[in-house]
Amino acid sequence: MLAAAATGLTACGGHVGPPLRGIHKIRHVVIIMQENRSFDSYFGTYPGADGIPRRHGKISVCLPELVSRGCVRPFHDANLSNGEGPHAPADTAADVNHGRMDGFLRQAQKEYAACARLGPHANSPACAGAGPGGPRAVLGYHDLHEIPNYWFYASHFVLQDHMFEPDASWSRPSHLYMVSGWSAHCSRRGDPTSCVNDDLVGLSASQTSTRPSYPAKPEDYAWTDLTYLLHRYHVSWAYYVAEGTQPDCVTGAKRCAPTAQFAGTPSIWNPLPAFDTVQQDRQAGNVKTVSHLYTAARRGDLPAVSWVIPNDKVSEHGPQPIDVGQAYVTNIVNTIMRGPDWSSTAIFLAWDDWGGRYDHVRPPRVDQNGYGLRVPALLISPYARFGFIDHQTLSFDAYNKFIEDDFIGGQRIDPRTDGRADPRPDVRENSPTLGDLAAEFDFSQRPRPPVILNPSPLRATAATPGPVRPFGP
Image (cartoon, rainbow, N blue to C red; front, side, top):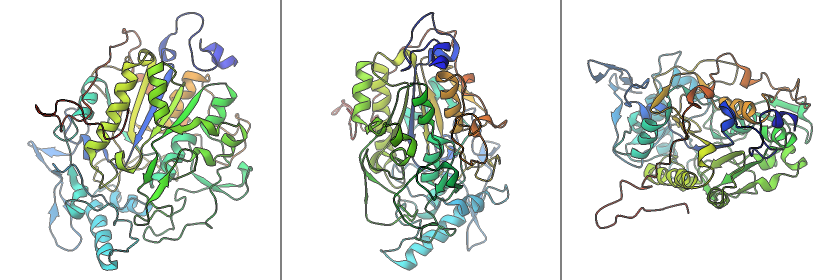
């Protein structure tokens, strides 16, 4: 409570006392997490960004193929549905290839070939992500013709062109990092000291295997997550889940029977119900369906901290249509902008991993787990700097750092100070490599008015002027 009072906030993130200054003008942080896109695949040709290398106006990189002596250059992909490549830790290493950043096509070709050999029931990590373009789709990029709303947000708010996945792995550890700053598995329920560093979390050492790396059992995460600190300081939070199905298999293989995703059930993209701290603090009810987000935004009841995750259909995970995912995200942003809380909100939008897609920037190494490849990322806020490209080195740890600085006086998820002795290898928020998201704001400006976009601009015609809403309010 003392930390909250020192910032001029109520325990739930509301304003009391004198006018708020600086970062504390943000009373609502919303993190929207989409799926499986690299930075270059979405913003590789965005003006001013660190995009696909060019020489004399033409793309200058060419990635070698697996069998032939030829190579393929990144190309504009106008398909709204496209395939992806394998994206386990071994694929990170192969894609990066000692800094050459040229393994993406070869890895995709290997896995697509394995899928073809094993037939329609294959459990190869490339099978379920297959889409138009075959393995070469991992070199395709989109621009304002396919994702006009995302490019609009970049041009009117902030584009982060050095946001790296926090770990060099797949979706489950990435989501664990998003809410806890670590990825591990634990041998004893309720005992954070029993947790062991694990950036596979369900995958075997070989990404083509369907065997988990430790005995299959109900998920239990005993280390400390961010909600533990939020609860301690009486800061409100919610984790909003679009119910439906998830595309990834529990083992990390990409072909299995469709797996249901529910708000109250732990899953790959929804880890918080499996955290001991969430259960012990009796806050499992804070994990809700995404319909509650729309209601809270309309009423001006957004919690101080929100995470929002999609289901398969709206996730942009290959081969799901990217325009459907863009419409889902735009509906969320529009609803928040129309609501009473817009003037004090920061929306951070990112994609959880690179999906095996090409990116030309070698990730920095901060510890044994990461960083992973670059992903697209944006800030949308009434205080965001207009049309700003942030070149700082960032990862999802920067979200935790921003939340901690804004709402709990800079307290970190740190076993030396938070009262829970988990053996995490480092405190990611304190990494000297990590940038500060506060630099993306101009708190001296008046809050900018909302900008309401058509959720489905590619589908709007003179005959059907209204927006198409595949998911949302």
